[in-house]
Image (tube, rainbow, N blue to C red; front, side, top):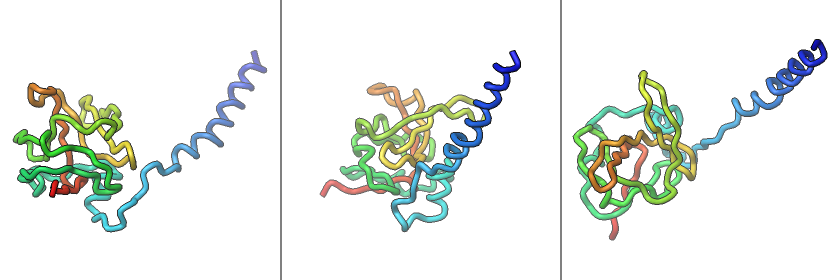
Length: 151
């Protein structure tokens, strides 16, 4: 019994000293675009949110693609963009493999948060109240996106 408890403590000590600090200090998300503003860094790397109705991309209607402002990965086609009335650029679907998701319990509710699968930065949350075609609403921070027109 004493030997087993000692081994448990020894194992936890090893885990705490070697593995946990590595995970806590390992930086998955790196700034690739050195021209990011402080607000973009706050949103993408600290999972912040921009003010609603502040993004010029809310009014973007041209054909083209929306890319990650940090790494340039192609995330959304313009034909998936719609006006959700929420104040943030909204999309009914992302391009295949564009994002990885995680569950976010901040603000006392369960939400699905999504991050660029290429560089790992935060973009927004996806909800189940989108258009009938997909039922999804990718609510994206406009500062996390760069629009590149088709022509």
